Amino acid sequence: MVQYPTTVDRAFAALADPTRRAVLERLGAGGATISELAEPFGMSLTGMKKHIRLLEEANLVATEKVGRARRCALVPSAFGGSSTHRARTSTPSGRIRS
Image 1 (cartoon, rainbow, N blue to C red):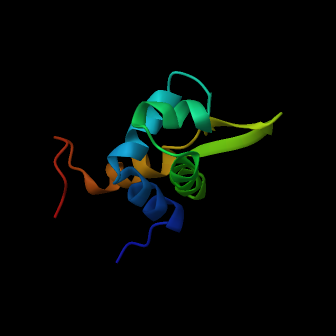
Image 2 (image 1 turned 90 degrees about the horizontal axis):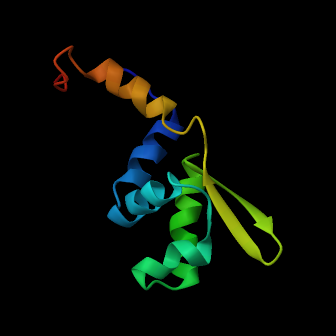
C-alpha cells in the first residue's frame, strides 16, 4: 500500500469544506486579513480563525501578525503534494485508477 505524507491527507481534508475552498480561491487573488475573509460569509472572526487554522495545518495558508490584524496568504508550494498524489493515481486520460 502506498503511504502518502500526512500533509497530503490534511490538504485533502481541508479542501473537503466549501468555505475553505472559497477562502483559498479568494487568497489566490492576493493576501487578506481574517476579517476580510470572514465578511462575505457573515461569519464570526472565531469561526473564520478555525477555518484558517485548518488551512495552516495543511500547509495551504500562512498567516502573519501585522499590527492588530492577522494577514493570510497562500503558501507558494501549497499544492505540490496533492499534484503528486493526483499524478500517481490518475491514468493518462485523467481518470482515477481503482
